[in-house]
Image (cartoon, rainbow, N blue to C red; front, side, top):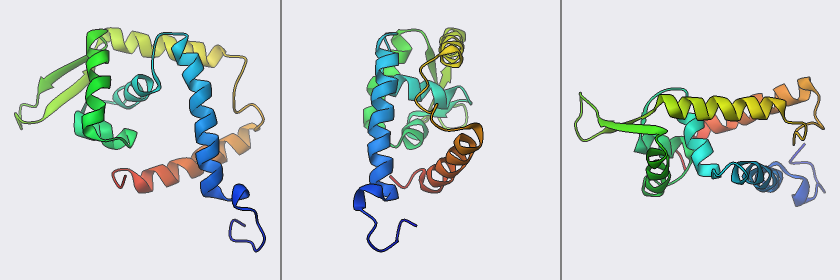
Length: 147
């Protein structure tokens, strides 16, 4: 449908994803700021909760330049939520891992999010939300590292 003749550019997938992305990031930003956290810090925790990663791998998952990930990594390390150690197989590679404190912070945020009454996606029913997540994951997975 996005290639339908006469369909306004503002109704096409790319424009909508960018617009909805900005709105979603702003909504998340407000929630996170009230808890003393940035979007980048939350996103880094979301990646690292699934396992260790190098700063380059973390940046690839976040679709940012690896140099820009350094400040976020530093702030998480200062909070005691992140540890970093040289990889035993490749001493040039630094492995980032959530600390127990970082895991507790993540779990606390997840608990708050589950209990939230103002859900940005509440206009979608469960089937629609599942389909949206499936399609967004398909797009994201196809483009990770192609930033």
